[in-house]
Length: 497
Image 1 (spheres, rainbow, N blue to C red):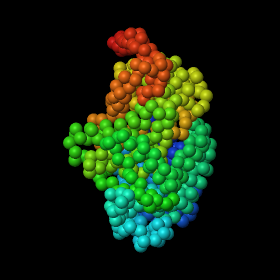
Image 2: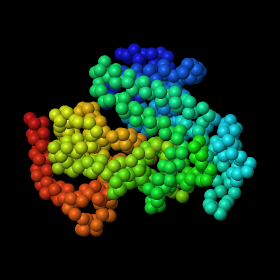
Image 3: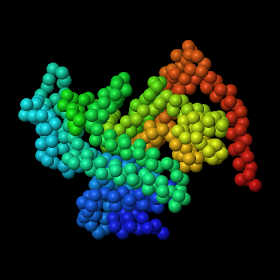
Image 4: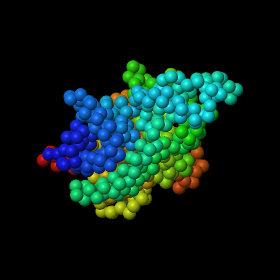
């Protein structure tokens, strides 16, 4: 039976919240419904009126997915969240299809309507060497992409490019929503006790997300991120980061035009080519940030399919660098200690690594129960720990032991969820559980020669494992195998009787 919040959402907007929340998190549906209702009720009246008018204008038989997608288009912050979950294969296919339309929408904002803003930003277009095209290429949650051509110069061979321009009035619109998010975070914390779901300090988490979404309109920051990304991928010949062009302002990012298609629109390719493309997505967006030996490693924090293009020269182009994060060296070291603990069924090692990674003091008994349960899944399924297992473990540590992790780690977790869905849509036979270990093996092979001269405890490598770590793994293999098969045979004997 629907709660009051769910009923109001359904009666007013025709939206049923249940398909939006995976079954595993069903207990959170009432909370999410109330949060969404709180959000819309605190929007300015004229914006709420526009949402209601469009909802009533939809056909009587419009599906819930169509209504939800139309609703999200009016709210840039919710639009961004819709893009994040658009490839989550735990959601209903119809809902995913409508949410995927949010990744790269047909432009509704006319270039002519922005002409005055463009002239003001670029001073005088008539004296520049660029000519705007009459139609925009695409429209995102906060910006419109307008193509242009230009005269060739001595400084660049690029004769065309795009201007990413903030939509008129978007700063005010986004500011209104982010203020609602501030109040919403406190509201959610208060409602957790009523619904008897874990209180995970949502105010702190949502404040982090609020700051990140605020960066969406900071195109000057995006320009800095583009320069950093160009350096990060400088030696990756199969990855393309758009080149910045000399027409950037705080409201306009000028860059080269990328020719190609969304990676998820490449179903026409042979299976082997799609497999190669899926592997490239994983390598560029997850493996490279994880296996870099540097103290801090850049990652793209908004890798939905609309930002990933398969170029005409068969490279992966990574677009829209408004949102980025950085993985610290210590976080990656602790992650590898969790993996080593899982490979050797060492619950204590796993718990210690999770505690070291967390930003809060864990409830030790609750954390140990989470770890034992995760290891039990490996026993039952008789498999090695994959990337999905690791992510589920960290999720359970937050839900079951009340742990808090750093903002960048949470952001990376969100990015991985998005990438996982993209990879599955590019090539159904590929998954992160296989692609990432293969990338790790390649990284390990590259560092073999330098290990001969490293100190036993040094973790300066891209795999973040010392020679001593590897030696301890080697010595524990026999006892691990014994414990594993003892558990398997014990389960088999219990089931046979």
